[in-house]
Image (tube, rainbow, N blue to C red; front, side):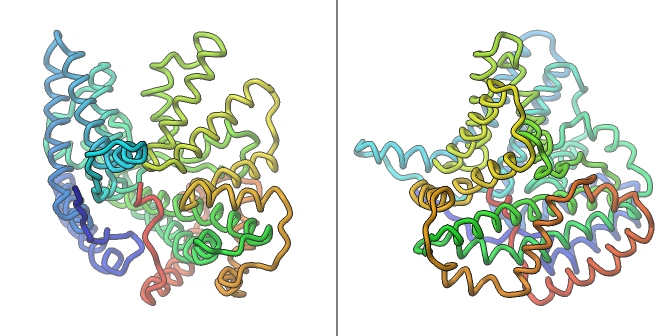
Length: 458
């Protein structure tokens, strides 16, 4: 079975979004503030449909099922567990079919089982994110930690809100339920500089590093030690500035339409341990797994061996959440093993060692296959003489090397996260981001030098 959809998502860093969609949505919101939720809901569905096409029906069906499940859980006292299990099973089934069926049939066929059709389904954009939103919503309503949303428009706004729909942050309903009724004040003054910062991080830094990383990870690259380290470091920086840039843009957009979304990054490459890294990297995902999987499994309450089992389980699932491939599973297991090792040794590895461990981990995460990952890792830990690969050297022009060096310095310097400082900090800083960084990034977008966000594929 083969179902493919070739329809590009509307990126925040695209002319269509910057020149048309965002201004039209903001103007509509400012002119008709009483209808904010309806405007955001309609705009969000248009935003999603632009990239997802017919898969918008999948999103709408998931919204309908979870809205109904929430209302039922709020009203009944008996058989609530059965309703919860059915709702969670529905959400997991969506992931199982659309994200993992192809991988599963590939593995079954690789074992020599005959007669199993190869399932090839295009991955609906944002499926991992909106599925986790739905699961957290029905679980929280079941736990009575928050009442169900009674308004269909309000629920669509929560789930489909375009700033966070495709790549997060993962927003729990209780974090935003009050804002659906009363928007946060002063959002534009703080929101636009935050959005501008994210745009600059994405277009100026991440997209400059992408050609270097792509060339190093390309099949057939001459994998000398120099090539391997340049490629691994380039991707380490690219994925941070790409994903944290998206999160800054999402948080800024949210503020501009009256919503305060949770922070998602806190200088993760400043971490002094892998445990600390996961408190700083993709924080909304870490909190989600902690509250909805790790703690229900027992957390650290039943002795060390149960704790180690729970940690490994969480990070295997975290790896598979990112993608249906052995490379992601190995990446998740690698981080789980490191967390167990830290608990056994009881000594944090320190900032430099933590950073290097994270760099090693990004290699299987980015590699096309496990053999390719082993090849690059082998070149990183043993000396392989040779110059920089021809195509990597061509990609690493002086301008990109300057960005590479600047990005490395920025992530390694101590200090507070820049995003919240830009949003609420001194006027000169906000003015610099608004009137210098944003126009330069916009010029690059107009010139066509942008690419989709990395986390769109998850």
